[in-house]
Amino acid sequence: MSSSAGSCLVFQLCQKVSDLDHEEPSYLVERMANVRRRRQDRRPVEASSLKSKIITWEPSEEFIKNNHVINTPVQTMYIMGDLGPYGKLGQREYENVLCTIKVDGNGVITVKPDFTGTKGAYRIEVDGEKREVWEYTIENASAHVQPEEEEREQRVFRELYGRHRDYLNGLVGSDFEMPLPGTLRLFVNGEIVSAQGYEYDNLYVHFFLELPDQWSSSLFQQLSGVTQTCATKAVGWDNVAYFCYPFTVEMFYTQEDEDSLPQWPVLYFEVLSLDFWQRYRVEGYGSLVLPTSPGVHMLTIPTWRPVGLGPVAEMRRFFIGGSPELEDLTYIRIPSTFKGKRLSRFGFRTETTGSVTFRLCCLQQSRAFLENSALRQRMQSVLDRLGGFSQQSSVYNVLEAFQRARRRMQEARESLPQDLISTSASALPQPLEP
Image 1: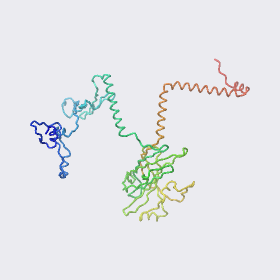
Image 2: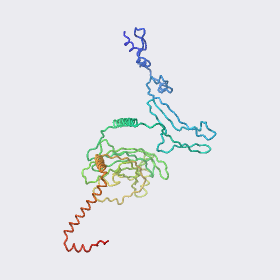
Image 3: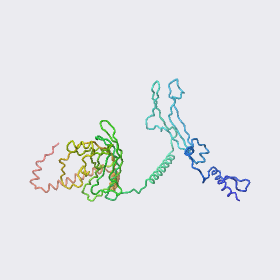
Image 4: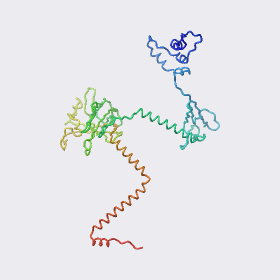
């Protein structure tokens, strides 16, 4: 049997299998000698023993080498300062670290805090009999870098930043999902933060979003939701229920007529209360028009509720539960079924209740934004190119405007009769003689 075949079996069987007297294991055999073979009849390991084997609190150098742990050696140096009072020098409590210098195996030097440069001096306050303030600066006193070395360093930095930029671009990608031309995508990350100022406890909010004409959403998009039931807590003079209920809505607006202004989506909501006997009461109705500008918006919307006639309705609300409700929540603003010009609510009795706080993060995406941005960039490049001639061009523009005005005055004067010209000329003030 050859020695090569024997060496290939040594790391598996950990014993001599060749017939050579002076067999020497290869580098691969030495490295794989500590590898444990997987046993088929292994019993399940208990949780206590498994926990003790996951972490090695004090690994040895041989353990680190066998487990291929990359550990770059670092040398650390401290610049200390003894800031003790006179006569108490050399005591440990008065020693302070002024600067830390670290050098790793790759030759990278880290200085913390950084060199002072144009920044102000660093300050250290010492607590003692007299509160003293020490100021110190850190300067690089080494020889100046040669231009060739500085250029080489800048080139290395550019290559490093370029690779990092390519790495980030590879993670993000360039194939962004863009909406169709003439379409605006509105993405809303919303949150129902809290409800405050209501009569009863254990509140929850039911809401839905109404999309006007020319607005649409995907088939899997939920345009309604119900929060959890939340107990209130006293904050100042109000009882506040903190929901912190998140919701996400994605909508699309397609412009059909350039002259028409889009109607923005409306969020309708109602606040209800639920007691121990599972009796619910309507606490308030409200509506919110989604913000037309992107960004973060904190909005507090007041609510109202219908009121029945006489004290019997309020007694029924207190003892039995239930209260007058709206069959159509769009009646909070203008009902979706209303087609007339005037909407009368005469005789509809309501009372003001509490308010609901929303946090809305709105994002807008459209190809028109990209086109406008590119147009602004092109205009800026043209202005930068003509920046050296701006003063000269302004003078030329003034002179040209003056010439055009003078020609128009001459044409108007030639079209007038001669007697009117002489009369108007005599009426003009004459210049003073020197």
